[in-house]
Length: 429
Image (cartoon, rainbow, N blue to C red):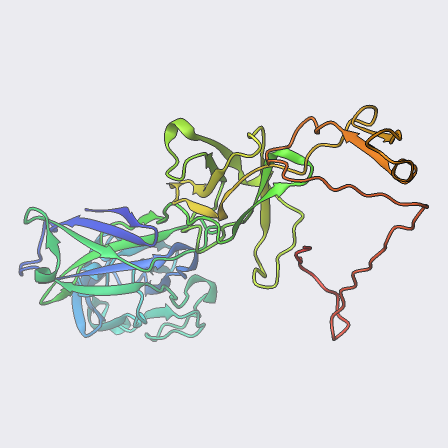
């Protein structure tokens, strides 16, 4: 018996016990096989067809320079055991069909990954003796009999050449970790499969002695995965005209950074302390489908899809630290800090009150103000804006003019040298 479990996002741990029957010789090695279940291939199928007039006797079946004597008329189960008794044949399934003139054994090699040789039939001690060559071995999808003299054609759809492919490691018993002397464990690495493929990997183990390897345990299937890495690009910025908000721009996480399991969401945390002390931190969990952004990738982020999230209801003028982690079916991955690692939300001071915010008065000539000064001066008075939007007001700008003016207009033209369309983003400063 064998079992498997995930030991890393791209590795599986295999556990198994010693076989009940060692075949009469000490187990000296094990073969651990693994394969991508989406690319396993097909099994080898062959046929043995015997004329029904052959009713008694035995024949010798050979494969890989080994042989077994098989009684004529054997059941499918017995025939299967005879083939599986041969070294390095592995698991075989046999079906028997009796037709009016012939008996057909359909033989499917369930685990052979190497080229499967065509079964050989020799030394037929059968009755009647004159018909000892009245058989046909069909294989590899070919129509003529590969062996035998029966005047019959093979149905090419009933046989095929196997294409099974696995990664195989043969391990000495001394090199396998035994937990208690009877159960063994081995770790298979580099089992990477894109997250959109859910088939996972198949694993099986065979025991071997001096005669070769026996039938492997039933295959086990599992897809290794792990918590994803954080987004590669995480940028935080103030929101124009909103002193209580900041916006987080971050890239999607795809394979292999998603560690074999599609990212389903993101966890965003913000805090007024750099160590994200629980009493000063806030967080939210977002569905990956709800944070898409219209932002295009910049020249150094080609191929990365951007997302965005607004963090709102913050205190203007207070510093906040932001970080983000991706999540999938395996859990929440590590956090990555934003760039910059902290930001202070805020904006320009609010506008002056249009009615009473700013007033203009003429200077009255008096003992302290000359007539010349009075006729060429204005007194400007104002009230501070209702809110400084998070930042101390350090100075004021006063402008004046004597006639209507024209607003300045500037054009920004972006054009590629080749004339091709230009994509991406740029910073306006």
